[in-house]
Amino acid sequence: MTSPGRTVLITGASSGIGRATALQLAEEGADLVLLARSRETLDAVSEECEALGARTLVTVADVGEPESLAAAFRDAEEEFGPLDGVVHSAAVLAYGRFEDVPAEVFDAAIHTTLTGTANVARESLQSFATSGGGSLVVIGSLLGKISTPFMSSYVTAKWGVHGLVRTLQIEARSTPGIDISLVWPGGVDTPVYLQAGTYLERHGRPPPPVDPPEKVARAVVRALDRPQREVSVGLANHLVVTGFRAVPAVFDAIVTPLMRVGGLSREEVENSPGNVLSPVTEGEAVHGRWGRHWMRGATLAGAALGAGAGIVRTVNPRRS
Image (cartoon, rainbow, N blue to C red; front, side):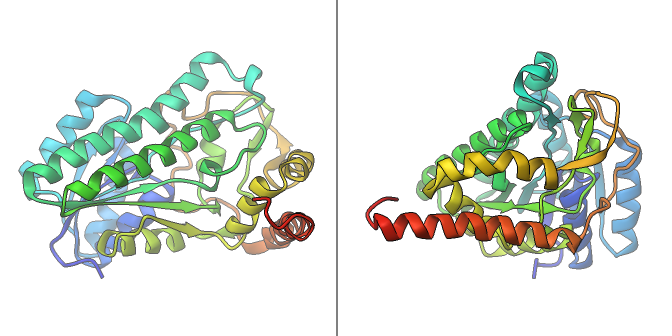
């Protein structure tokens, strides 16, 4: 359990995993610095956390803007003193074939999700070095380990995030007291899919099996106290990664139809940048509209990929 009085800064605190993490930490007595682009939503999250007994500081900032992010860290330290932990959850994405996503939107999604992670890590490490230590937990993704069509901005950014975190973990071996963890979920029931940009005339939806954001938040809170190199949250994650690596031809053949069935909504919508270029406060919440009813599809997909990997290893046990 997080120690009472511990100060934790959370990016992406207005919605989804970041908001769920804030509520769990509030229940455990942490002082919270809530960071996102939406003042109105952050004020609502602050009220929710304070109702649970937490002290909060609302900091409106864009993780892609180093100056506003640095100011947020300074404000946090002035209000509560040294930071004990940082949870980085902020990310944006746009659905669509790579060539159909406008360059401005693609670049902005990469900037927020990847460069934003670098900005948050830089501020966190500087803060921890000054105070004598701290714990950084970065939210990665299953899509930081595999590829899927129609999500090139997110896949590209999350592969970069995973690579950056691993590098920082290696470098942190020479800085005792500074810990860095990566939590990588699969499908999660958050509003991010409806908030995302789309150039498919379809919204995205989480691939099955879909976990509640509270499950990911619990893993995040545990990692603050007991850092780990990485934590997977998702029943099918390792099966899917095994299929991607061990039987790429099979994976490539089935991932597009699976994505159309399990990763895109049925109803048509207008193409738009969603919240990539600016926040969309409507719909920001802890949960989306998905749940465990997508489990069957993921179980079948994971079983197919895992079975394919098993066949390959049986035929040629030295192939990895």
